[in-house]
Image (cartoon, one colour):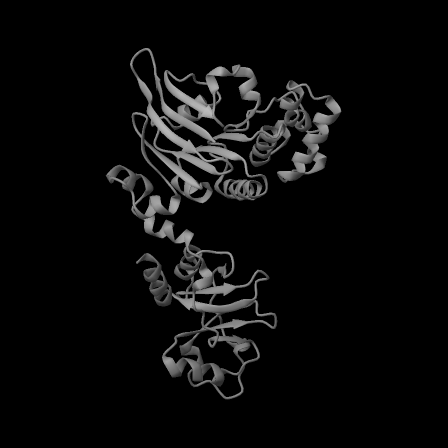
Length: 371
């Protein structure tokens, strides 16, 4: 547990970087500091390992005042990940990861063995151990940075905008990797970002800072999105916060239609009976494994000769699917909005179609959880 008690940082010229922060970071959870530039989020993080010395107040880690500890020893006991990894360019990947264990007095063999374990843990190939940082991609370098921070198995991990320098696809992959690691390791993580979507995705708790280093709100992400405390927080989290909030509601609660799903060998007249029965304008065609192939609109079914199969008709693309068991209502809504049929295709973990849901039915489900 990390406790801030009136912690402040005021520079000699009177600039207030952090103004009297009172906050408790829970053990084994991920707490995200988020806010605009100049709001004190990074300064607050760096006060934890005394890279920035607090001017006033107290910061405790598991009850121990950080001022009672030697700064160098304190930093070696805390994992630290920054933008662009901050790797030593003249050291191999293996030796970069082994840096802190070696500083703590581990022998080289033990430190390198630990580094090799962590390479596998963060998704790096063993063949990359003897490479140098410039030989890796930006995303791979960030994985090395995470592995290095974990090398001595610290209970606390500080992450200062670690994924902001990579492209969106790599960033999403690194976020997913961090979520996986945290499920396994249960570290006390303090993560700094300026991106509210990243904060909502990663954080068990989110601290929103306002300019001047003041804490505006500290809450669970779903509560932050549902009940921002003031206009600043509401503006910062975005006026589409209702859509973001859907990420916290599971898609498995949706009622899916299966009667409009047909395979390629089904007859046109069978599909026509369904669409004429309730005015449904689309049917989904799947293959023998129930993998989606595309949408057929009702207009194509009219006046077609008996015996014609659906596989002979022109199909519109089905868009992208959502996993009924693991995805959220937000993923289902996204799939429906991007579908040419205005319908989302729900699948199981093997990609087989379980059913479809329309935007209208999604709207009803969203309304029910928003009440």
